[in-house]
Image 1 (tube, rainbow, N blue to C red):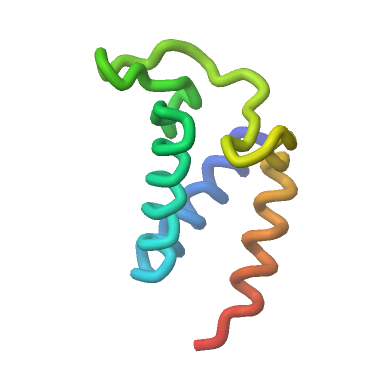
Image 2 (image 1 turned 120 degrees about the horizontal axis):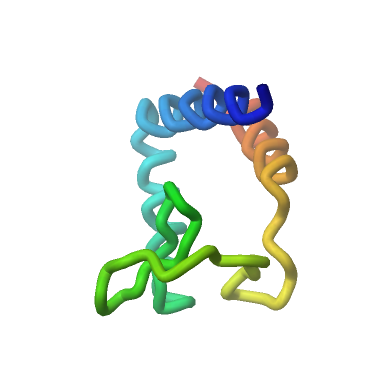
Length: 92
């Protein structure tokens, strides 16, 4: 049940982002900053780090930390709540 709901919500967020050029640009910039800061890329499907030389997933990330600080990355629920606040604050 939870996995199904998560999949539905992920698809919903993907559709919202795909439908807004500003969101696509923002996501792309965040991904580039992360890649530059860590020297790795995260596979969005498995959550594993992608070896920049071989291009293969080298395993799960584990307890991810922000490359800009030593603080833990917010939980999925915290990120979802922040994203919902962001969307509510947008004006058409």
